[in-house]
Image (cartoon, rainbow, N blue to C red; front, side, top):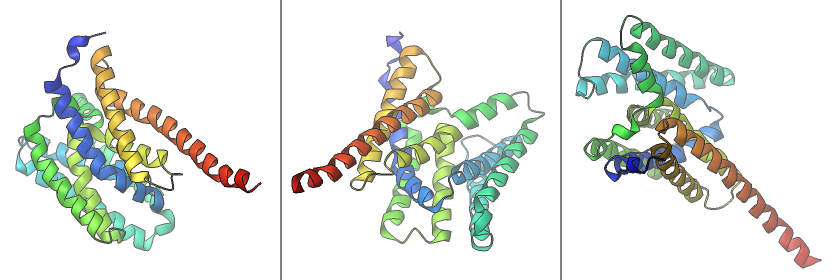
Length: 262
């Protein structure tokens, strides 16, 4: 084990980045499950990634505002398109989301086909670079997330257009920090874990997600493994345990009054 890898100057910002992602993705994930559009985040994230790849192909600075504008514009376009299809083709919405994801993903491959570093850029988009995040980079993301959360919890975010716009803004910021895989996992896995919880589901999902990010970061540092992949496995493992505990507790609550009455 590599104990030297437990460097708080690296793991600290990465953990804060994970907490920021969870702050927005956990409640949005519960909404996504209720809507039955499970793969929307993959589609929007891939569209935002396509915008980033397109901006890079023009030689623009990766951290420049021009790239951010292109990424947000692409994600908003995808969100508005999906909002339109939901109103007109609701019965095939999930299939259309899948098609949009595939088109955006292959579009990125085509743009990177003549780039000698194309494979590396594609890997960064999917897996992310959470260990390279700095506190300075997290400040604008935290501001965007705070704005999104304030709107989310103070308005009727279930309205389709507002939901898709907030989702696009959030995913665009997230995918550049943690990659497509962690965006999807942070959105869906905690929401699935607390699906049967009747009380405190949001709190439980936040706690499980934070523990999974902490465990994944520490394990990846100790065993020198890809961080994003380890965090995804940590999320999945803790989600199984959490769902089992919730199921056991719910059964105990149900059976206890019956035994008392007998």
